[in-house]
Image (cartoon, rainbow, N blue to C red; front, side):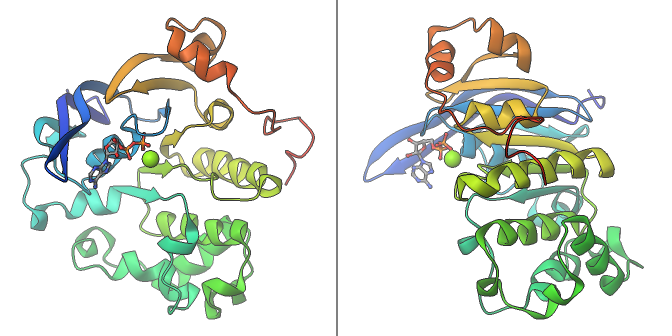
Length: 269
Ligand SMILES: Nc1ncnc2c1ncn2[C@@H]1O[C@H](COP(=O)(O)OP(=O)(O)O)[C@@H](O)[C@H]1O
Ligand SMILES: [Mg+2]
């Protein structure tokens, strides 16, 4: 069991909307190996964000359990989740809403390092040194630290969000629709950056996208979600070439013709 990065058992999350029960996630059993690059795909509302928020410990399930590296996190009180806050970092869809507009970029990026919950793991890490390292890792100039988010383009803002996620030296990066809010022209750059960082930092990666081209670019494994359940999973190429459900085949058929693959026009950095 401790060999898994994540394991879930009958993971279930129901929301209540105006007295109506929404079964966002139902009985999901999932194993993710260390070093995995897993893509989670499915139509809008299929439960992708709900699942990764539960993995990151940002939400609690209605029933079922989640283990991270052998520790059951579902039962842990907040004060004992510090290791999770350091080890699992998220990048969200829209850097406009995920970056505080009133903070300087340097403070945004080092904020996770100042968290009371994270501190024990990161004692002795020099914040200025780490700031310089992660800015360089995402190809931003050192003076970006003194500026504010609105001074940057969408693609640069997502680089800032990625730098912030890298700052506490996580083991896992979870990216929920990381390029969906960006101009098509900069998507490939951000995807290539993520690919390079995952390799360079030895990260495990979980990418959520409704766009199968994005996960094909980044992931070697795929899980396909529909109506709160995983309906198909396997190696990316296998799912691509031999989808076992009509649903996956329909998702594949709906792929828009944007070019994001390595070696294709527009993919260079
Ligand atoms: N905070 C919430 N409150 C109520 N319903 C929610 C909430 N978050 C998600 N849902 C519902 O749960 C279902 C799954 O949502 P979500 O996980 O966001 O799907 P996806 O990320 O695949 O688009 C949807 O029907 C959505 O409307
Ligand atoms: Mg979502």
